[in-house]
Length: 341
Image 1 (cartoon, rainbow, N blue to C red):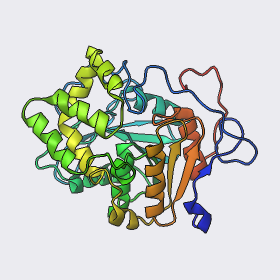
Image 2 (image 1 turned 135 degrees about the vertical axis):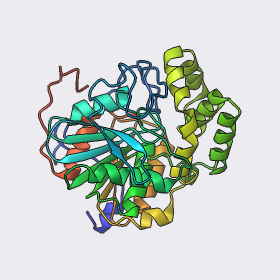
Image 3 (image 1 turned 90 degrees about the vertical axis):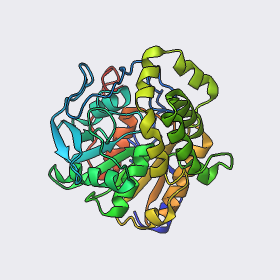
């Protein structure tokens, strides 16, 4: 885990569906139908309003339910949900991921047979509260409150922006044993056309002026790199677009969590636990480059390229990647298991 080879991107190999074991390559997997790739959204995502803390709207949760409220250091109520049993795994998703959204649902289903999967709505999102002023430090305190509310040791899986937040939690000493980070979008590090931290101010200005749609469009295009055709297509799906607009006010926070879209070198250098940074070979090249740049910055980390996966990976493949890193025995997968696929 800590030898010189750890800095060289490698392709996972193993028996069908089990990354990492010697023998054969991972079978390429198709992305779930209907996704806005490389985002975290699905046309089936429920409309999202702003329910009061601890009061999720009807139908908001599907895989899990609101198990309890955990209060952060500043008193902010955080909606926490759990599923399954086994070693504890904290899952922190992307900008538009909450309890009950399709990406979170599929991932929880793929993990809950062998992990105690813990998810939570970040402050200002879903059924959690929001206390002014926002800061990265408070987001880290939120994560620490959730982690310490469950029995340890706790591993973490962060995807997209969630990978950036887990990175900051690790550097700040949140008691996580190790972490898998999937495609953190540190775009400014590898793309000379990407915006820097000033984009966060622009997003705030859009929201303050009542132009939530402009904030969402800018985030999808300039942070996640969605082509404008896909952004326009999202606007033509009223239910999906309403869900995106509901989170417009927190998108600038994610740009700041990502350090202005550039790998936060000092943060990365402060991480002292095992980290695997992974990316797929079926998505955009700059996502792979960003993952490699982060792995280079985190001491002793590994960089892995997974064949056949894009920014929204097959949840079964991602689950097996976590299994490989944590040492948990991967279950056999029934190809007809639509719940897992």
